[in-house]
Image 1 (spheres, rainbow, N blue to C red):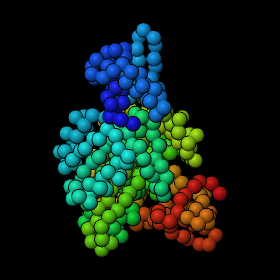
Image 2 (image 1 turned 180 degrees about the vertical axis):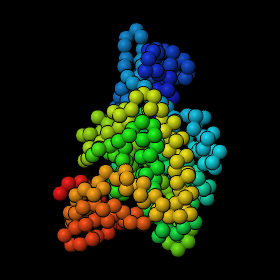
Image 3 (image 1 turned 90 degrees about the vertical axis):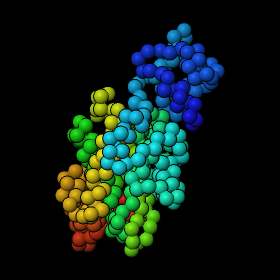
Image 4 (image 1 turned 30 degrees about the vertical axis):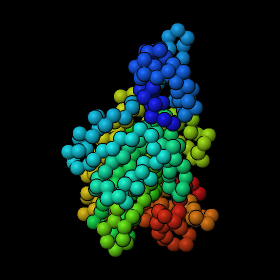
Length: 324
């Protein structure tokens, strides 16, 4: 993936065809570069229609990220925005910046991630133009040991924004997924740095499937979905989605830093897809415990009613699946 590829694709509409000659002239590149970019885009999951004598157009609309459309409102609440067209990983990029004294509330968004990461070392996959990927640096007054409910607060905020945008079935799956039914729509990856007893820094990474879930279903182990399957085109503007999500996270993280997870617990349980259902909890060694998910405690730990009695699980230890 190259920045030039993105520049070429930004020249294309999903309504009108544009000739390779015109695109080449606008960008001052060769016609062959345009042709090669179209082929590369197809390999990266973005369909481009090509008609001899008419040129190229995108098969479906893509809301390209534009800092001018989301950064002003974020700046008003102290969030500094950085839009980088191509990155290996927004989390890795922001972690490096954090180690170089990057400011509190620094946001990094990317149009494309070459090595996006999810929880427990999994890859995060998204086709070109099909995902919203961003990371937010937050410097907490709390020590890292008191941030165990952080991923739940983030997931709650994201799910609530999606509901307000019209996706009324959006819910949360403990500890860090946003789902519609059984299908994953978005995920959260949080990486911490700092003293266990003093102020700490969190890199909060978010990935949302916007388009192209059908191309991911053969590459991931769990059911997946995207926003295009549930919202109209008006609800798919990634700039609006990014702005509203970060505004909500800004408000929730400020409260979480001051009050912890407890004030969010009831709202989180109201959106939990497995609340009061039979689930299986898998540990890192392959062990499994079945029981009824009773919700979470004030630290964000999962509460399970099992044959062994009441159990508590922390997110770093296990994963959760529905069904007996």
